[in-house]
Length: 239
Image (cartoon, helix red, strand yellow):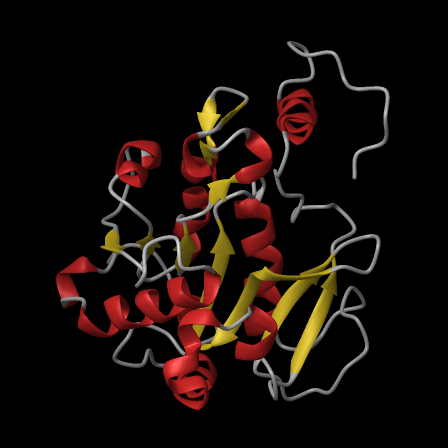
């Protein structure tokens, strides 16, 4: 699993987004709850992310994108490199990898599938369960947006049809091939460019597990949903 924790909160007054608290916990610590579904977890971000991560039940691998705050593709490149270099004892031995749940053998980096998650997903664990089920389940379910059967990855699609590339699970070799294709341009590439040519399937996020946090209003809304007895739900619809 790669967690991208290098984002600046430009719409949060410049706050370091992974450290922003929602219902008493940092965003990064909530995203790392999804680590129970991963064989290895790499967090790509600056040193400040270590404090935001909080106590964890398993080991974390740390990496920094080049350049720092270089964007999600730079973070994915750094995460892949860190997974390739990680020692075997940096895996979480008592946590099942997504491919192991389907009875497959892990590749040297830990799994043929990699969860890729942004650091601003308070319900990342729920999102990860949807993604892992889609990637390792016996057959596509009705929640899948129409698409071909053989895929390189799955990602959430919100109620407005917005594709959430950074709430996704992708074949590790497909990601590596995308990085090789971009070459020296990977540093400045968009996620859409990295995934160009991939065969992808969208998962309708009916429960809005991929709801992200970009503004202080999002923080308030997410806190109200997580702690309904301690917060007054906002009058506007959750978006």
